[in-house]
Image (cartoon, rainbow over all chains, first blue to last red; front, side, top):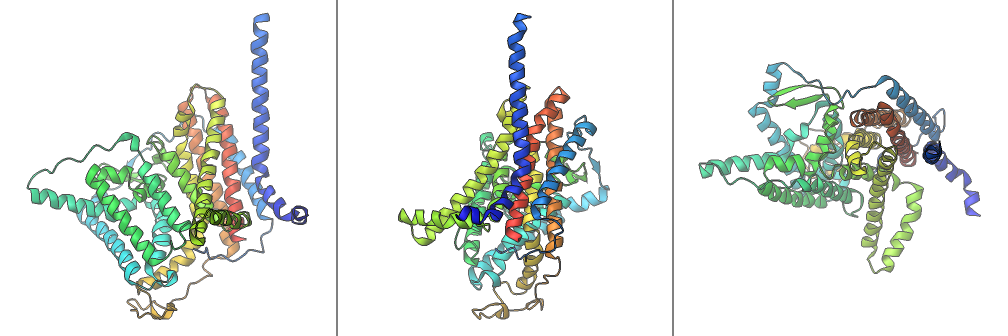
Length: 48
Length: 462
């Protein structure tokens, strides 16, 4: 199990990337939510 | 080229935590820019001329001749010592001068004093002399050069800088004195041919790789020239127009990507992959040396592509917020932000190399062909300045102090990049809120570049 045996090695590398990944995921979710909301509003608009 | 740094063991927090702190600084800077920087400020550089006497002295014909002569002398010395000197990288003037003093040392000089390489450029100096001689001999105007094709933009410079990076990082004998000298001769021949076709100034401004490379860094400088005056402008304002010339983004990607690859090739990530790649290329029938070069070339191309892809991610994100701009337009508009990032990468990665190995150039300049004492092959040499046995002072900066400087360079460079991208967005978008929203993705990209830079430094210095 070499991957587990050297966990600390690659975990340190992951730690470097975490701020980028965190921001990326947050922004991606925010963008998708924003688009869904805009689509919902556009769909609801003619009914109103 | 080894970077000459010993490991650090006395940092108060782990290196990755510096990455997190840097990300926090960038996020705070982003918020501060959104709140405190509501209008574009860098479009107008606010030029203020220096005293006329100083401008006249700096731009005078004797100064130009002197600087050009220095450039020609150093080019000649590099070729001469590379071809005829001791063929040991550590004992010959040519490799250390080209890779350390020229390639690395001129960057901080350009950032502080402006486009100094334009004055020192040996190819431009020779081209101007030849043009002057041709005009004098012809006793009248010589045929005008061809118009430089707009579409060609900076693409010749992209090819030149990539070729230089390949020589430095990929070629198995790229640091041998003879290789450096031959490369200088080949590049000189190609440059003179291009100058003959398109004119000296047009080629130096657009196609000459080193002229374009150092000019990009010099645009950060508060010092600039306008007509026959030298003056001060707002730092970074010289970058406003960067990106309008085709190929600029690719050039900046090569600049950042090549430094990244220089860092990653010492990391376990690369040292783990490289042997498999070399085996693969050997399996295709390449010799061991060519397989090594093919693997490293692939690594260099991958690093440049990664940087380009990263930037494109930020541009695509900015495109997604709306505003009606094409991704090509946005890619050009935000290109200036890549210049401080390139500076941060170069400064952080090569600072210790310049401080340590740069001292060796003092030793080698006393005997450019290789001094007996520093040459294991035992070639004869001179000692012009009596500095042949000067040892390198490795206490000039400690590993821990160097790390703090490196982190400082990386953070400062990326904050400057954020400010530039923010300023450009304010000028581009009519709606300030949309401008700020477009920068969310650029913030993610900047944090990514920061994390990558600190990870590379931790790999190569750790």
